[in-house]
Amino acid sequence: MTANHGSTQVTGDQVSIGTLVAQASSSFSTLLHGEIELAKLEVKASVKNAGTGAGMFAAAAVLGVFALIFGLIALAEGLVALGVWRWLAYLIVFVVLIAVAGVLVLMGIRKVKRVKAPQQTIDSTRDTVTALRQATAHQPTHRA
Image (cartoon, rainbow, N blue to C red; front, side):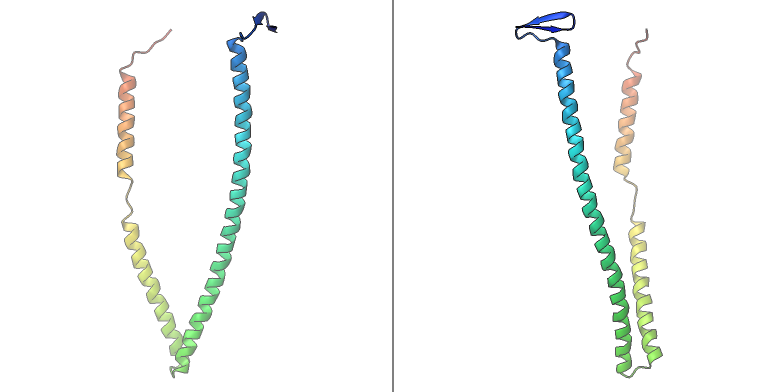
């Protein structure tokens, strides 16, 4: 069996390195394009699900806020039913809400003050950069 590849003749099982590289490159390219298409389809489905889920969480949050408002009104009206003046009942609910918000703000401030820079990562990166600079500084440069 004789094959003619360009200007060279290849016989039997002999195949030029160039032919093998071209075939490998073509196969790799086809495989890579297939993987990219698969990734696109998976990401598209994931993004769609994430968007739908986020929309449902937003709707639940809005309904939760409305429910909280009605619950607070019911609490104030319950105080009225117990004999507290209406304006005082609503003022009590208001003060309780302000107190809860204040406690949450203080807790949030404490947590924010605990935030620190990732010092170990910064130190490690600095050491790596220093090591790379030293390694490249000691290598002779080859200029033509």
